Amino acid sequence: MHSADYLNRLLLRYSGTFDIYQPYTIFGREYPAYGYFFSHVEKYLLTRKANMWSADSYEHILFADPEELTVAHLEEYRRAVTEYIEPTLVLKGEKLPDPNHMYSYITIAVITEKTLSPEVKKAVRKFKFEKSYMHNIRGYSQGRIAVASMEDENVTLNGAGRTLKKLYKSVFADVKAGKPGYLETLEKQGRESFKQQSPE
Image 1 (tube, one colour):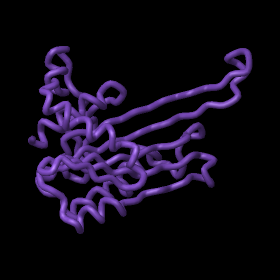
Image 2 (tube, one colour):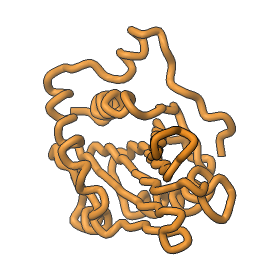
Image 3 (spheres, helix red, strand yellow):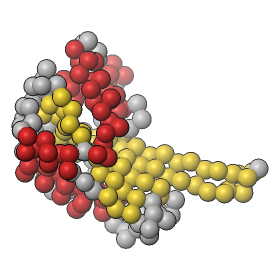
């Protein structure tokens, strides 16, 4: 199985609820895709004018496809999270997120050809990013990482990303079954991915 086929199918699985941008550049480094999800929930008391509370939830996914994942790659992704995704996409350049912000998941989705070395596998599992805003009054951000390796058809995750295991394992079966991917679906629908407005 090749990483391009896996990524193509994974993007389709996400595209039902995420806006997919292709390609996406951070600090001059081009990544194959970025996904954005937003959900707004409100609670009312009898009428819409009596709004009890509102909550906004977000997820940002950066897709990466190194042939062989290294510790240096993981440091690159950590920098992307701490120096670009969180301050620019989550906080939008402000000190705090919007008042109704509940949480932002920041996910690094890595598709690699080679089996992970024990050192890299350990580093993936220890990958962590947690940040609360005003003692969680303005919510929190959490970093998740999922690594799918083609050679051994394995998925390695950090603690925060463990809920992603079922999805990432199922993509292997989808590709083997010859199910269509994101690019085929776009072509069939006559659509294109979203485009990054101002590459960093």
